[in-house]
Amino acid sequence: MVAYFLVFYFIQPQLMLEPAVQWASVGVYLLFMFLAARRERAALGDDTYPFKQALRTAFLTFLIMSVIYYIFNFILYRLDPTLIIYEKEVMIRSMRWLAERTNQEFSDEEWQQFRADNRPVTVVNSLFGFAQSLIRGFVLALAVAAVVRR
Image 1 (cartoon, rainbow, N blue to C red):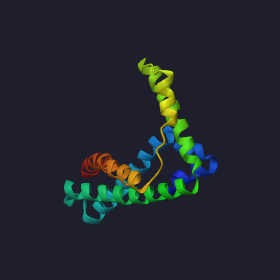
Image 2 (cartoon, helix red, strand yellow):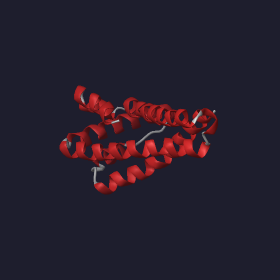
Image 3 (spheres, rainbow, N blue to C red):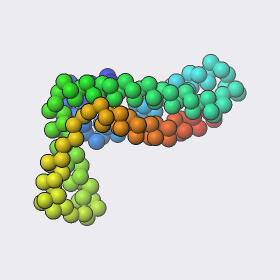
Image 4 (cartoon, rainbow, N blue to C red):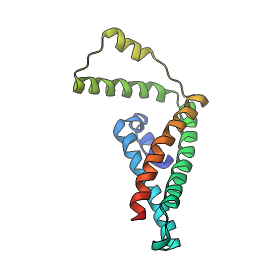
């Protein structure tokens, strides 16, 4: 996961924050979760791979990848504080795009508030983001376990 984001970071730091790059990272998680569960299934034999074990393997893979990612992300934001500025620009651009598609209007005051809102990358924020990601990871692990179990 770190290598995936570093490729975009070294091309242009803003790229790693783009929504398409962020969403595509889900595919990287799924790939490694699937490969880990499939490898374990092959080692145990096709007929003896319980769903619970597939779920555990897929989720553990997600967990390890996420710990590494959140540590990397925390360090990278500390080393390059401009990422916070880029992240805010991407967030505002995404909000404008979504507002246009949903016919939602924000006042100038609300846009100013979005711009003024600072969300520094702290240990607490990183831990909270990691905790939230575990829910998504569990859902992904359920899907991987269901596919590998078949």
